[in-house]
Image (cartoon, rainbow, N blue to C red; front, side, top):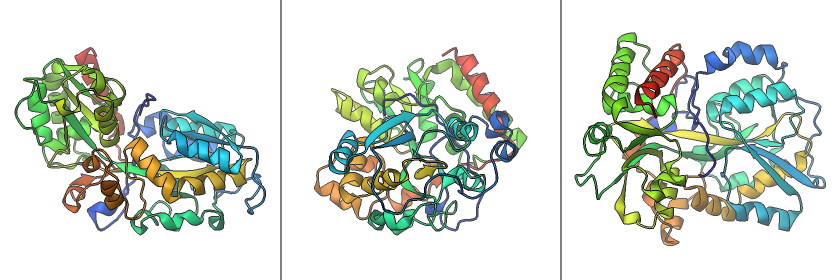
Length: 395
């Protein structure tokens, strides 16, 4: 992905049985409580309601001339957008945001007049957005291509009936390293930190967000990264600020756009899709090794939705439906490098000779090691640790 986006990630606790069905969010936190005042912010700024607004309702009528999409940067294959316009007519206007908080703030301030038709929030925010009238309810009759999605990705806890949202993409966090510099095999988060302090000292990049950085400490130690234990957070801070920060050259959430292709660093934390992009763009892909690290890591998910007050409601439904066609799902999977939730996509991707399939699809054993982040009272402390680490690194 090429558009710089600060990752934001917050998850509310929820009771799901299997590790694979844990509810997840791709975007990492910037401390929702600190930024917005928590749920009270939504309650105070957004009117009541569950997706009700003065927007026209979709009936399957004629499509409007355009559709405006507010999403994460470079998150849709160009051919999907161009074919939609050439085949169905509406022109697509696309803007990007850098966090879920930014998205929500824009929708709240606009009070149904944002000018955007489609948005792509992460799961944790969906219940609050529905409750406070920030999303329109789907006319699911106009999105028949939902049938192309694997049932596993439907009926998530944040929207059990998919009345307001449907999966856009999901993935995880790992790292890549330069095998010409780090000649030993790295397989865990502990290996990542060891290499950062040795072969990759001064040549290591970590994600520019609190969750990925703080999470990696707890993942490395096989601990619950949602802990609210002050002593555990203090130990995390001591390790990251005093032991790791002096070795960090940069904080970069998107090394795939330039750092990997240009060989800027030799060890880089990365989302799987962004790392895959970096390998594809590199003139020496064999130089790099992707690691899905143990013993734990994360899993996140993004969702299509329609913004409250959407004026191009027919075109919005049409574009979401277009994006869920088997052809569009395949194109987006290849372009963004993330699993987009379609049925039987892994064997099709393998048969098609897609690059780095193991960076898109994961085994049941790998999925069992993925954990979601939960929103708790330690978010501000986590942001402080992140800030202290960046200051100590001077990067």
